Amino acid sequence: MSLQRTNKVLITGGNGFLGSNAARELFRQGYEVKLMMRPSADMAIVADIPCEVYYGDISNEDEVFHAVKGCDYVVHTASVTAQWGVNFKTYEQVNVKGTVHVVNACLEYRVKKLIYISTANTIGHGDKDRPANELSSFRLSHLSSGYISSKYIAQQYVLEQVAGKALPAVILNPTFMIGQCDAKPSSGQLILHGMNKRFVFYPPGGKNFVHINDVCTGIVNALKLGKNGDCYLLAGENLSYRTFFKLLNKVSGQQPTLICIPGFVLKMTGIMGTLLGVLSKTSVKLNYSSAYMLCLYNYYSGKKSERELGLRYTPIEKAIGNALNWFRDNNYC
Image (cartoon, rainbow, N blue to C red; front, side, top):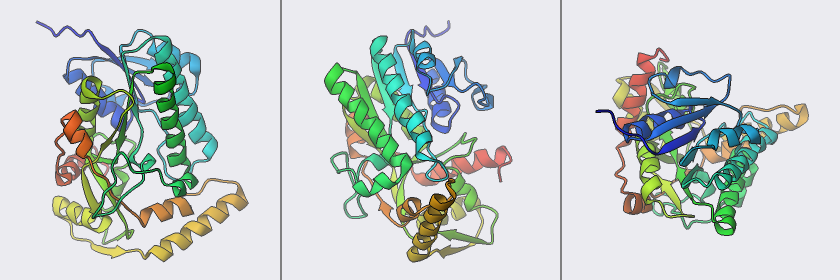
């Protein structure tokens, strides 16, 4: 006897790293899944998922409304996530205006709950001794990052609509996600950076890493347990970049020499990148904002999500293994 699927979930950015993994998990949990993706999107990563696909652009309000219509829940993952090489107008069009379109559609069609996927960077980071939590204030220095500032603006808009128009919404703030099916790749570039090299150069800072599976579980649990208008950090392990690459070496069986790039070198390179971008009016691969972030210890606590969403975080060594196996199986490295 087949499972009766009565709750339809729309996932924007359905063919992305998080979107595709979330779709797979939501289907496993008995939801009817609908994916929204651009007409040019590669379907290969979601070919194994029995789902409805709607082709549309998140920046087109009419197309977003068509996608949301008939859905009980919406998980909004679509976002421009690149930390550099993108002008702010692109961030604004997708991350801000796209979110406004999704929120308006959710209000119009009275969805039961919107899960907005934000980022941990909209919450001020902590350090090893005092990792940040959901009450930590946003760092104004992060406004220089187009990605972070656009996600912060979008997150504030969602919260305003919760307060002003009774939007049923929960905000999830994942940290740096690692795991399988990162086809683009996105965060998985960090793993590929450390593979098949004699020397691996790494920045002096660190960050919080989380298994993509735990973020997907967080989405599923937030649909039932998430408190309206609340933010939840989805945060696994706090690791320095050096420790992360040592774990990668352990999992991969490789032994490259690890070399730390001094902070002042990264920052000077970032300054030159920013100046080049301003003078040439083009996007650059490394600007000061992103270089500065690489020198920080962006550490967070996931205790609230453990307590209220029932999450139990997976060791990052396993996440690295899952990601590496997938990359190897699909000839990325």
